[in-house]
Image (cartoon, rainbow, N blue to C red; front, side, top):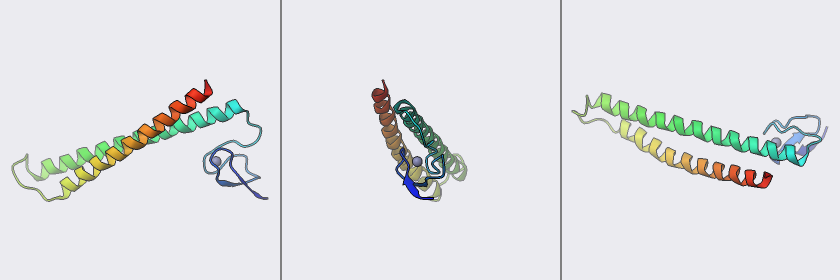
Length: 116
Ligand SMILES: [Zn+2]
């Protein structure tokens, strides 16, 4: 057994395994077309993950707002800083997630252009 590098992600894998344990790339006889399709699928998976992350972040923001609403007794009382911290952190995280999502979408677009 020896260590080789995955064609798709460049990480170290065993030459005995047919699937890359890091990215799931099928080793062996791969045409350019299959490789391009694989990269497209990876790019779509990445967009899916960032979309899920953005939903999670939105949920955290709504939860922070709900906490504020509940603790302030319908805006009538001052609250602790907890809800504001949750809202601020999730708003910041949302911007970061959107930036990654934008990058992932641009990557997919470039890959699509390369295929066609
Ligand atoms: Zn790999």
